[in-house]
Amino acid sequence: MITDATACPQDIAYPTDLNLLSGAREKTEQMVDALYRGGICDVKPRTYRRNARRDYLLLAKKKNRSRKAIRQAVGKQLNYLRRNLKSVHMLLDAHEAMHLPFPLKEREQRYLWVIHTLYDQQRLMHSTFTHSVEDRIVSIHQPHVRPIVRGKTNAKVEFGAKVEVTLANGFAFLDDISWDAFNEGARLMSYVEKYRERFGYYPKEVLADGIFSNRENRSKLKGLGIRLMAKPLGRPSLTAVKEYIRPGERNPIEGKFGQGKKAYGLGKINARLKDTSQSWIASIILVLNLVKLAGLNLYCLYLPFRHLVRTCYKGYTGERVQYLPYRIV
Image (tube, rainbow, N blue to C red; front, side):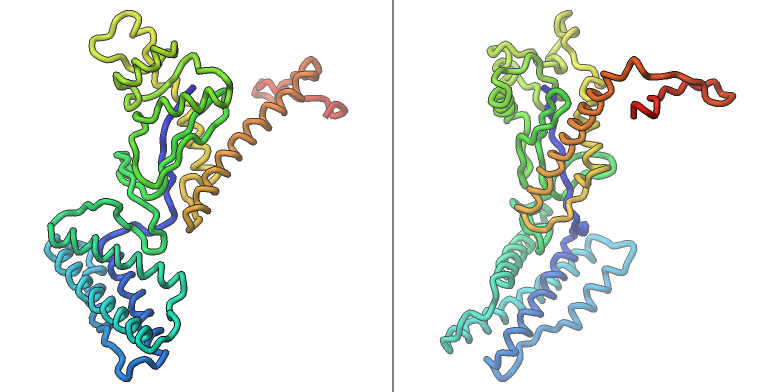
């Protein structure tokens, strides 16, 4: 049993505080326009959209941006957004006072809730001089997406779902999927139990990296008679050296991740809804298993005719080429 976790990035623009606030501000401006067309009030609430757009572009077009300039621009966008949200609620209260039906559709109401949460988070970070908050929103269109810190060279932070995949006999199984970052080492025993539910017995060996190799997991696996093929703790003994996992032994699951991301779109999920994205990821894992199964079936078809394979030499290079006679194919 080989197990490891990876992130499945969503197809979203790289989020910055300034871009998120500007997009939310434009969304609230559209809400103000739609609510004012109902003829609720005589004077349309001011949004200062031209000034807000000018202040946004003044920094967005710069190549080099200082921290002070970014903070000032974010503060301005927060003030514009606060004014727009106040105007939206004023228009909604006017609808309620006149006993009119709720004017916002379900999708627009969802956007309003997301923008409120985004405003609260950005205001908190701006006032406390921090850059992190719990359940941080990185896209108003896909509020379920969360940042996943990976620490890799090309992408230190990825935005999407984190999945845990177990590889057994060349077939991949999706054991866990979450939009929040989680410590996969704390869930190793649940993956081992899922292995037993699938095959009816525990695995003989578990190949995992260092995050799975804590003392608690080692003792539990030892109690079940399962050998953990991982780096030993402390000064290694002769037995521990024999059980030490080499980097190449975990290549199959890394190759499975690479196959899914390069060839089948696991590295860029284009779906927008939460359930659709999860179905997309599960379908890609299914396709990887179908490809593996198709390869096994082709090999089984080849076995009865392996004695009919002929060998010839190609051109002047002397390269050996094996082929089946045309009548057999």
